[in-house]
Every structure is written in structure tokens, then in C-alpha cells.
Amino acid sequence: MNILLGVGDIITPKVSASILVLIIVSIIPILQPSEYVLHILILMGIYTIYSSSWNLLAYTGQASLGHSAFLGLGGYTSSLLVIKVGVDPWLSLLAGGVSAAAAGFLIGLTCVRLREWFLAMVTFGFAVIAETAVMALDWITQGATGYATPSLLHTRLQYYYTTLALVAVSLIIIFLVIRSRVGLAFSAIRENQLEAEGMGINTVKYKLFAFTLSSFFAGIAGGFLVYYIGYISNEIFSFHHSFMPLIMSVTGGLNTITGPIVGSIIILSIWEALKIINPIHRMIAIGVFLTLVVIFMPKGLHSVALRVIRSLRV
Amino acid sequence: MDAVTLSLTLLWGVAIGCIYILMATGLNLIFGVMKIVNFAHGQLLMLGAYMCYWAWFMLGVNPYFAVLISMAIVSVIGAAVERLCFSPIVGTSKLNEIFVSLGLIYIFDYTAVMLWTDKPRNIVTPFEYSTLSLGIVAISFDWLIAIIVVSTILVFMFIILTKTKIGRAMRATSQNREAAMMMGINVKKVYTASFSLGSALAAAAGSLFGIVFSLDPYMGSLPAIKAFAIIILGGLGSIKGAIVGGLLYGIAENTATLFLGGIWRHAVAFAVLIAVLIVKPTGLFGEGR
Image (tube, rainbow over all chains, first blue to last red; front, side, top):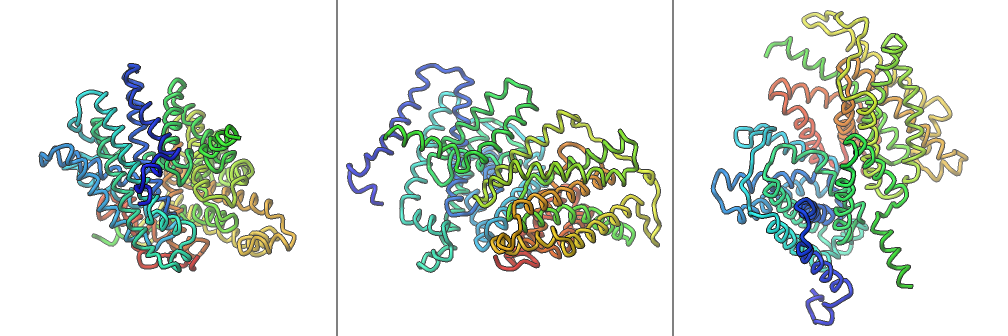
């Protein structure tokens, strides 16, 4: 809470840099970018929320391999509430987040005792089970065919600013959590769970909290993504969607706020840039990129950027 | 539910379970020695299947002999992958392993699509239509041979691990890396050897998968992720766990398909995993880590 104490404390270099970035990003539409550029920027924003939610969980040392379960759950809950029950779309977005959080809480309950690979495999399994459930309930969800969702907003520009607001709010909440005593407990658990327990930290409680909060944001991202794309099917649970936040967070830098932002910008840019070549070659190129990043930069591209900044200061 | 369907389901479960066991044993070996998980293990299975197909189709050798050729080629590919991609990241963060494996999955899958298109192919054995009658049920000859081949390979694995010098070096490294180094074991070589042996097992699994079912560039992902789930289910590093887990998985999957329908196939397998881990967080035969 100490960051709320005084104005002087608030205007740190980091905060002023973020405000600067926010201003730059808000005036981008004045330059009248094409619809396509806006589309990519919106996707980057949504993926920033999604991979930040993954990164928040990883901050406690719990790496999920099935985060698409929450993305999909958020997407299905919010769009089905609107279509079948007639709930207000904005309220349904929140409901999607809450339902994902509830699922995250339940999954977290089974996961808190598990470590590393055991946890990774169980989360992966939950994504498979969630997909199967959606396929089995095809009289509601229309299974692999999917259905079109109602739209939340009318123009792409509206979507752009809403995404921006959502990203800002989510990142501020995550920042405040990580900066608070809760965040300290998170990193203590990540570094050494036994020692954290020894210090009197209730690890089960904090891990569950991280799980719930993380799945909440993933659910919000899922709901918004589905409204933006205008369509949902079981594809949302695919491996691709589970590994995306991991790829983005690791590329950008684990356990940092900026990591997922940098990562989603880099990965989506590469993805789009590679669209000019044949799709098969594109997949091979992305594979080569992933492999090379880890072999030559085991701490992520973020570390390279930091090194460059540091060398500029000296 | 009549006895015939039930025993057929069990037999199918055992047959597919055998392929999982081969995959799981290979992953387990690599994990035991190097303490890394290769998520791209399924891509080695896919390569193995294509090598077997190639040896059978181009050279015209018997498919079961082609299994050996495929194992030899893929063990070399595995050694190269270990040297280039995994050796630099041994001992760093676990996420790096997942990351490199993901990269390899993309590279291998789409290179295969580029080279061989994504058309499914079949390996035809001389016993394609012969079956062996076992009382009330008949089992296809190919499946029977697959089960025998898997058992033989597992016995050979056991002999390599207990009787040969390199096998003992692998076990020593898996127990205590530093102590093994002090005893004059070249740990890097042991890493390459275990990865290569693990890849050969994946190639055998792939070849048998290709013979019993069919092959395409994406065939590897699910068996690999299931093999990983199996070694988690059985307990990391436990060979006994891999065998019990593999059979359990094969049977659970086929029973689910029989009673609940095809879409539940994969979900039930993971439900079994989660149920086991809730009761015993270190897996069936795992020790606390």
C-alpha cells in the first residue's frame, strides 16, 4: 500500500514511463492507422491481459499448461449468458471472469499440493476436460461448429479504446497486488516454499488466491476476445491457446509486469510479419525463433532490452 | 455388455498401452538422467513412423525389420537434437525446456508436412489380415507382434541399464550427477546417450503405431502428452510406474470410448491422472521430491 502514501512516491520513473506509453498508445488512432493495424493492436492488448494473468500465476511458482481452460470458460459463459439468458453484455463479461475465477479456485484446490510438472500436467488435463465438456454439451455450445456471438461495441476504434482501458485496469490491479504484502508472499513461495511456510506464510491460501485472480483475468480476456472476434468454438481450448501466454511471458521476461506486454507485442508482430511467406514455412520459422530465444537468451528478450538500457545510462 | 466386447476393449487397451509404455519409458529415461522433460518426444515418434514407412516403402524391407532401421536413424537425430538444443539449457529454468520443446514441435511437425504432406499413410505388413483366435476373441497378428516387440525392447533396455558400462553410467548420473562426475563419468556423453536411447524408444513406438494404425505429421502430440501424463501418474523416474501407468491409461481410454463415446477418450485419461494425484501427489510409485 505504500505507493499510495504520497505524490512524490507515486511519480517514480517507472510510473512516468507507463503514463508516457499510455499517452502514446491513446493517440495512435489520430495517425489514422488502417483497420488491419488497429486489429493487430487490439489483439496485442487482449493477449497482454491473458499472458499477464498467466504470468501472475507463474509469479507464485505455479506454471499452468492449461490456461486456455479459463480463457474458454470466460468466453463461453459470457456469450452464452447473453444469448440464452439475455444478460447485459458488459455484465456478462464480468460474469465470465467470475465463473473462470470460480473454476480456477476449484482447480487450485486440487493443485496446491502439487509441484512443478505434476501441477503442469493437471492444469493441462483440465483444459482437455473442459474442451470435452463443451463438446459433450453440444446442444448448448454447438461443439466444433461453434456459434456467432453478439457484438459488444460497434466500431473498431471503440474496441481499441476499450481494450486499452481493460489492459490498463488489469495491469494496475496486478501491479498493486505484486507490490503489496501479498506479492511479497507470492515471490517468497516461488523462491522457496518450505522457507515461506517457515516464515508463517499460509502458502495454500496465497496459492489459491493467485489461482483465482489469474483465472479471473484470463476469463475476462476470454470473454472480450470472443466478443471481439464475434465467434466461439471448441478451438478456444486448443494447445495453441494454452501455450501462447507461456511463450509470450517467457519471451518478454518472466515475473515482470512488462514481460507479457513486450512478449505479446513481439510474438504477434512476428506472427503477422511471417504471414507474407507460405504458412508451412511460417510455422517452421516461429519454431526456429522459439528455440533460438531460449538457447541464446535464457532469461527472455526482456533481459536484452534491460541490458541495452543499462548500457545507455552508463 | 457381452464378454466379447469387454475382452476386446481390454486387449485394445493393452495394445495401445504398450505404445504408451515405450514412449513413457523413453521420457522417463531422459528425465531420470538429465532432469529435463522433452515435450517434443512425440515428434520423434512421428519421425520414427516416417522412417519405418520409408524403409518399408522405398527399400521394400519387412516392416518389422524397418522398425530397427528407424530406431537407428532416429537415435542419431535424437543425439543431434540433444547436442544442439537441450544441452545448452540443462539446469536452467523448467520453462526453458517447455519453450525449446515447443519450438522443436513446430519445426518437426511442419518440416514433415513440407516433406511428406499431411496425407495419412499406412504401413502394410504381411500379416495385415491374419488374426489369432484366443478362445472367444480374435486378436490381429500385428497387435500381438507389437506387444511382443515392446516386451523385447523393454527387456533389452533393462539389460543395457544394468549390464553395460554406459547403462551403469546413466544410472549413476541419474542418482547423483556430481558424484558421477567425480567417478570420472563424462556426464555430457551420458546425456547424449540417454537422449539418443530415449529417441530410439520413441521411434519404435512410432513405427508400431504406424503399423497398427496409420501415420501423419501430427500423430505425435497426443501420445507424447499422454506419455508424460503416464510418468506423472506412475511417479517421475519410476520404470514400474511407467508400465503400470501405460496399461492403466490404455485400458481407461478404451473403456471410456466403449461406455461413454469417442469424445470422452482423452478426458477420462486425464481425469484418472487428476484423481490419482489428489490422493497421492507424487504419483503411484513416486517418492517425495
